[in-house]
Amino acid sequence: MNKIKIYPILIILLVVLATFNFSCSWFNDNDEDGVDDTLVEIIDQDVINNSGDGGYEAGDYKIPAELVYNDKSDDFLIDKLYPIGWSKDGKFAYIVEPADEGSGFYLFELIVFDMVNNKTIWSWKIDETEEGDLETTWKENYEHFKESLNKYELVQQDDFKIEKGKTSFKGNEYQIVLDTKTKTEPDFGFDVIKELKISIESPEIGLKEIYNHKENDFSMLVGAFVPGYMLSPNSGRIVVICQMERWGYEGPPNVVFFELIGSDLLRGFNANTGS
Image (cartoon, rainbow, N blue to C red):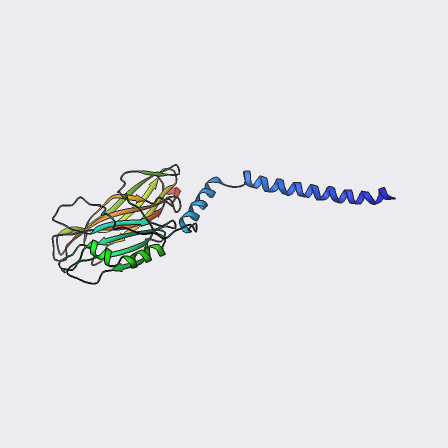
């Protein structure tokens, strides 16, 4: 009689053990065979690009050095660029001193740029003044600058330089391509850029257009050039520098200024059009 009672218990135990073994086997198969390694890499990169790790510690900043991005002569008015640093979630901070086209004022702007969405998320401009310079402006407003830069978790980099030519990331090679279309301006008799495109080409993952400018009544662009790029040390992102030349307000001297374009180096590429 006791043996008869034991049999149902043994059968239940065998069923439970069999179910447990099947479940473990199912999960192990999915871990080993059911996941695309490339997809995991892209997802991991996206996490790095769009979220901090919670380990940021507020710090101090020093006056940044100028990054010379042009090779124009003294016959041009040139915007100056002073890179500051990067955040782990895809932000980039810099100072620009816009060229003065005759106003007589000192011009200064500190910018926090979102490389993910290619837009300014915070900026500070100096009030119009006939006297001013980078060092004085920095020192007089340092506490405000420090507070804002720490708010966006920006870490200063000391050794900025313009990278040129091809670059690579996670086994992929990249080349920056600039395309322009011009037309003759009938009122002035010289060629202006009516459309400008910048793309990143990768033989491994394809093509991605990262910038498109179309002419408007106030553009008067007569030249464009990509002197190089800067690579973020944190997140697999690139900041491309596009140097542009604009016809002066009342004719020469022309103005040379820059446009910064951020891009992820893994996401958004069209494999069907890659070279």
